[in-house]
Image (cartoon, rainbow, N blue to C red; front, side, top):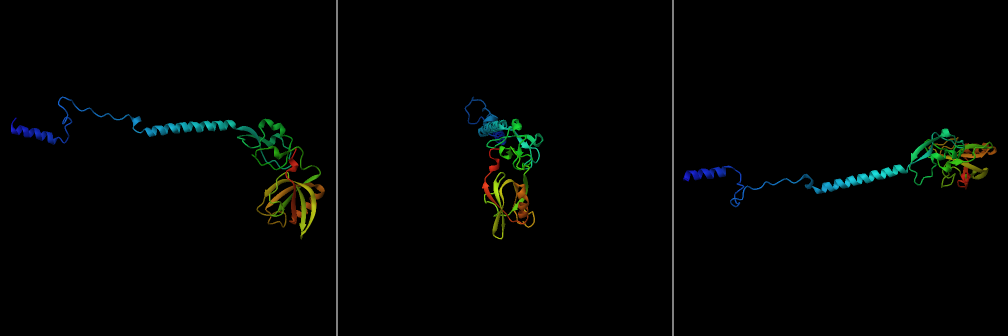
Length: 242
């Protein structure tokens, strides 16, 4: 090979810009094998594990929700407002499906035990009906009357009042107290932002009392003058055993 031919060979090898894959390999070893790409599943094994965990967690949550739905039962609720002393009819009742864990409720299949009873407290629409709201006899009998009494703080026990409580009604005027009802039954208790009944402008609570008819006028007059105080005699006594 002439000197010019050797120069041309070296020029072709150096001008390619690519390394010779056979350089440095033994003679006769053949071309270098191509490197195969990794399978997609083996590139990030952590993602595959996370996906499996999410699937398992989703299945567990779905199972718990299904069990929770299975625990719900049909119970009785008030279809419309049931006032104190009202005798309950089938038209007053509706059915709702709820989970009743730890809640005293009456099943829809026990409606016959509710119909004909009397409401011992006001039951708003949609409220779950429980045995404590019911009485066998009406609080507002023929010899009874319902009187609304506004009460400011300090005129009733600090523990509050609740339907069914039996109280003594006292008229307090200029430091002197006079009993105006020996035993009255609390039928409802509501908070009030502003006073009602005459001068009781700072009243925060309005209590409906069931009193004897011959006591109703005096109780109402003392209530209008903001002179009523209530003394708790028995807690929830009027609904016990009903």
